[in-house]
Length: 260
Image (cartoon, rainbow, N blue to C red; front, side, top):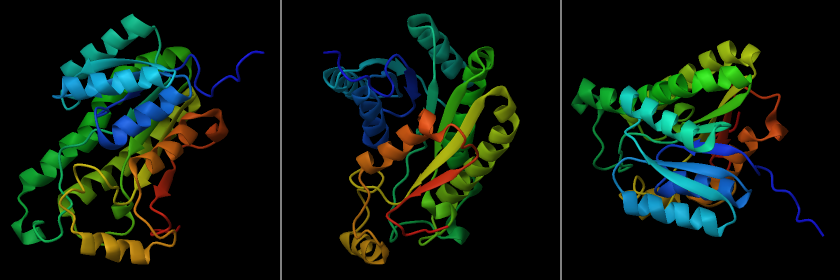
């Protein structure tokens, strides 16, 4: 009896910032469905190799690729290496972003926030996605297909806590994604976003006080915090043929905290 084919068998998925947290969960979810996952990381080679090992244990394959996605040269080299090793890329998940701590008590109010803080978040969100999309676009255009999924935040719709620099950068990434979707749609390339609420456990939510989490949970119809695995499912959906007639969309993944 032949085994049941898995949804991403034979496909190659690039996930940026995939050595931990949400990115690692996304990488492993794709591997579970038979994909070859390109695990991008910037510093922690050991963590990236552990994600590769786990992807292989789950029945997929993986390759760790070091690159600072804020650098166009580093991204171009990473994509060239990936294509040399795998000959194709089917899906790009722009998950990496500049480090951020969701700490309501220690956050900077607007009048305390220098422009450089905004710039840092723009570089990690919009500039990084720009670099990756520019690097993979010739390959996607040649094949007349491809899916790009950008990780944003439900804070773009409901800034329940004013994380000015982070939320503004993620809002800009939504605008970037929709313009890209409009232009690339006729070329067979889809661009969508996934917008999680607060996700725990992650490095960014480590400083979030339990009282803040409890308050969010109380307002959330599904009655709990999101986990990294909760975010992975919608990403796989947007990468799959099940969403083949969707582009320019933002999927809220926050248990119903934001409803549209």
